[in-house]
Length: 475
Image (cartoon, rainbow, N blue to C red; front, side):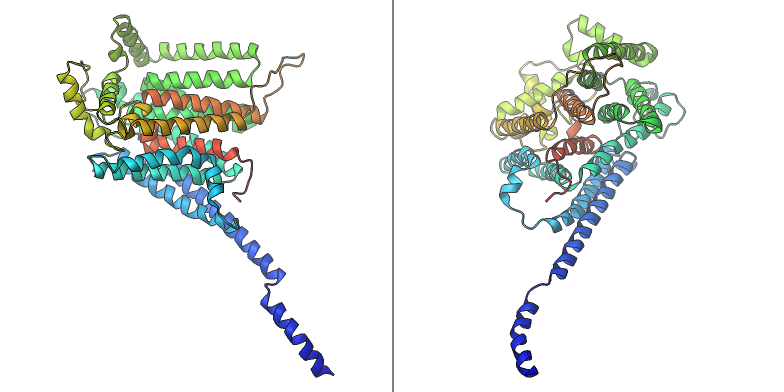
């Protein structure tokens, strides 16, 4: 009967109602995909805001008018980008600890973050240690989040975007040098010296460090782009090169020359690579000859080197280096604490003076905020454990780069000329040249201690580590 048939269907219909329908699961999957995609778009917008706003942001009324305001704004935008990237977890069924441990960015950054956290237990400067550790934690989170959260296309767009703030800073710096536009007033004759070419970076050194990596990225895009886009990249490269020359920061110039030589040696046949090396040497010589302040600075450094005054050649960097080694000797295991180098420098200098050590007499600064050497500063602040963690992170970077990037192809020149380098070969050249330039900068500057230069460097490392996975989706 109809009633009996309805009774027979009732249990089955209840079971059917208790199961999620296929259409419901499909709709849920589409919604998760849309949320994931929307999160990536908003996160990318936050990183673009970081690139386009931080270069200019400053506070004239603050004691630290440039570095601290840029750091605060950068960290806020980084956290916003990571918040939106967390929406990408909608498409990941389950996040397991084993998967996280295998991520290159996690393996590279986690040991150093852990050791820096341990140093807070023994440091005599807990406030400075907490502030510095939080900054390190945000930087490490950015490295992990940007490397696995952004798609390959997004990482490539953001990597190219680094040239925009560099170009804007270069324009302002060039106008300062030629006395066309002066956004700030300096005391004495600073405007006529290299210290007056600051743009909105705050100092000539910070400006120069900011320009090295964008110059390498511009060379990569010159090689892989065509038409009007190539012309625009060439204009940006020319602006950055000229501004770097007028800053007269020799460490950054040497890092760029070394990175550029490695880049073109990687992508060109040997015969053409030698020609490019000669061209780089000629361009460097022309800049030294035509830019009068740079010519004078090189002449002074050569004269100091001939007299054997190494500390003068290094502009007093030996003072900061020997202070870092003194701190390490006093606290060999965990150092003086993350971020405590600046606070401990006065005690180190007084102790070294009592030991009869010499400091640069012409150095007007009575203290060093940074050691001007990233490995030595890590050694001073986190001891031998921090140095081991830093070496581990560097080994992970080199291993990932070697695995991801193909070796230099032995291209030969035929009747129709050499084959154009592939995108993979150009990416390999950028990866190795960028790492080499960052390593050289880390030996004479402090690129990872400043928001203006540190987050573009983290973005470059995220591009390198993220591409290793070879997947568009973080799942």
